[in-house]
Image (cartoon, rainbow, N blue to C red; front, top):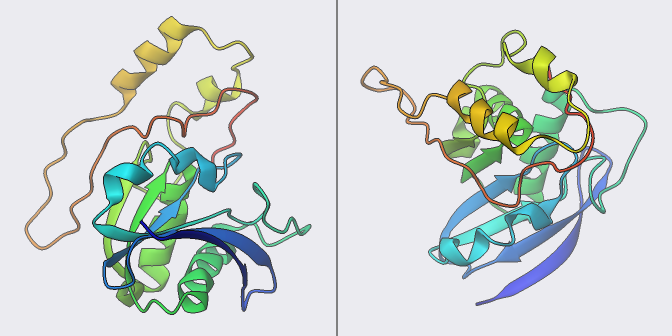
Length: 189
């Protein structure tokens, strides 16, 4: 399978590395990682995505991407995601957002609906409004995180959600390897 990492100079003024994998004729899939992660969190998922041409960038301030002092709002990060699609010559892609990458995916879909062919949220809230109810508890975590707490926290996430006809279908699940193991999480508001 064709695979390469390209450094993309984005119209938003930053440079990000992006793993590009799969045939050019396959459906495009943009993978957006969680805060504090990098494109590498999707390494174990990639073999299962053989039917897609995947684009897995390091997002602004993460991994090997540029780390400017500003530009971290959801709107700016969604513009980075749109600029990634521009840089690789993709008009519209399926988007998978893991955790806070799901916030970026939702903002991309809201700001540029024609660029998102479908949206999958993995461990990410359904709304960009407000602060998740569990965020205060997560903010109080310290290393090492108790395994029983992690198992119990899975009950916070609904596994099936009915949607009215004609709305987005959103998938839930976990992407092994994309969960933080150190430090605190901050949740966008």
